[in-house]
Image (cartoon, rainbow, N blue to C red):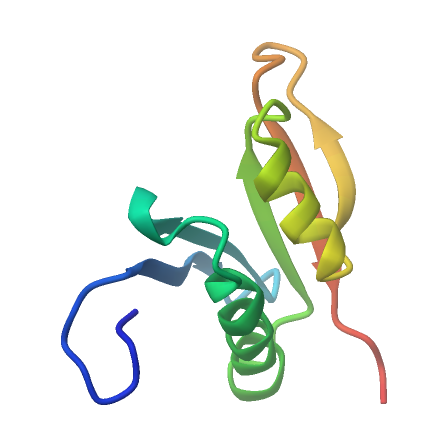
Length: 103
């Protein structure tokens, strides 16, 4: 991600672990520390979700993260993700998921 009309790197965001058979993918993102708290991800995530659901025709997008990463948990919840799974073998890993809404 870069600011409009600039080449300065702010962070990255992607859909990966894409499964055509299951029509799902995982969203991954990170911001350089100096860009935290500026609303950048809140602006970008809806666009990536729209791309995943409308262009790739995904049925579900997941995010795996540490439950201690409260800012990321809140960001996902603001974008309608809900807690989908807790990794019993690794309690520092949870999965949030968002299903495509039918129009």
